[in-house]
View 1 (cartoon, rainbow, N blue to C red):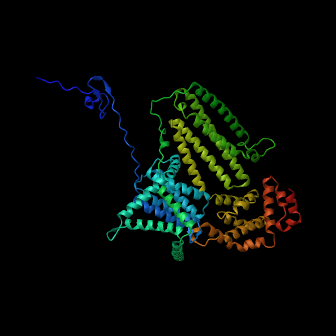
View 2 (view 1 turned 45 degrees about the vertical axis):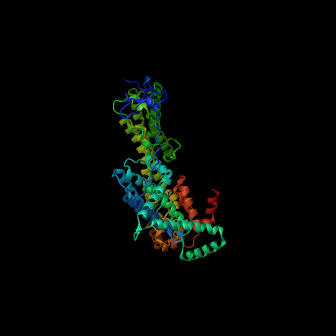
View 3 (view 1 turned 90 degrees about the vertical axis):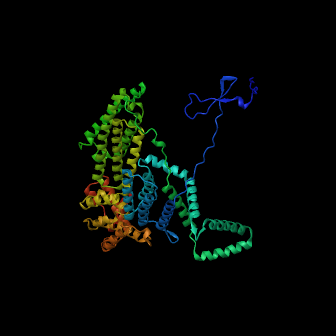
Length: 589
């Protein structure tokens, strides 16, 4: 006789029978059903797993040694005893050795053309720093160091990713400190002296010193004893607080340099859509693009025709000279070309770049960019006119580099349209071009180049480039280049340049270069050249008022650049007779 199973309580757990998952995929949690209601499965409650804590990866011994080496290099390059002495040789040492440390400390590195280019630029920065440093070499050198550290680990580290990675590294600096502490702890835990671990000795001593300091604050007897101990230590010598602060700053910087954080957010959207994928632009956008590029082409055509009639032909409008017609036009034309690049980039950053209906707009954009290249040639022509009129200066070299950078940007925009690249592709390469231009300007001896051009023109009898002698005589890079003017046939030029060089000679002698850190290659050579020309300088300035000689030189440059005739320039009194009426006339004007 069979007996029926006992009844199952309604809420009994044994009443729930597991069933295999259906259409939930492999590894799905099985559902439970009630035999009394098989068509109403009871969904299982998902388990909430605790979030795994971010694991702090201890720094390896190689990384700790690299961070310590960077801090030591900074100390050697900056500090001389208790004084800060940073100069050309110090910066050259820092910028040439820190990249080597970053390269060998890296756990793994990837070879790339970008890494090679950055290494070459850092070498150029080091050479320029050894010759004669400036603010540009320091700023570019520090920026290139971090870019080099990122490029070691990431071959596609454009300037955008590098810039934002620098901020990400700054934000994650506490995590890098924790990794360094963990690395030191592991290093000491594994270090043993005659079979005894070092960590059980170092930690108790450190804790004891902390509590001794607390007790010294609470008890005058302990305080007197601690003062006696500190007086003994003070006789031995402790580094100043500023020097310890320098160690801390460069040590923290080394942690970020040797283990930088990567920001990959800018990589999203950088790829070009796959072939065959088209996007449709709005009809309004199509009309705006077509109408805008037609009108802009007309405007640029009119301006280029104006330049062809007056600038390139050499026949300026009535009442104006060629120099007056081109005066101050180079800067605003560079702004116009930059706006051209911005407009085309923004207009074709979306569906217009790939929509087949926008083919006419893209052709008009190519025509507009081509007219932009013609406008850029006119801008170069304007700068050449300024140089031919009054000589070369550091600012005009900046203008040449700026126009070249804009021209490169227009070429990149054409590549973007032709190859249907993304807007981010364009921004990355334009930022890289800007960084390369900035490094080139920081490294190039712009004062030396411009001074050579101006001295050659003044020696040939021209007076307008004299206006640049005041600034170029105050730079150690270009001061010695002015020495041939001491043999100029015009006495006023000899006297004025001699007084300017005498002042620079006194300034260079006043520089305190007691140690190798403050030294460079150019400054002592310039001072030696000025000292060697001492008899010429003394002979040219003998018996004259230096202030009068400088005022005469300034008056010559003013009259010459205001369009004065040769007779008016020659009528200016020399320094010896300047007080007889020339100074009064100069002040009245």
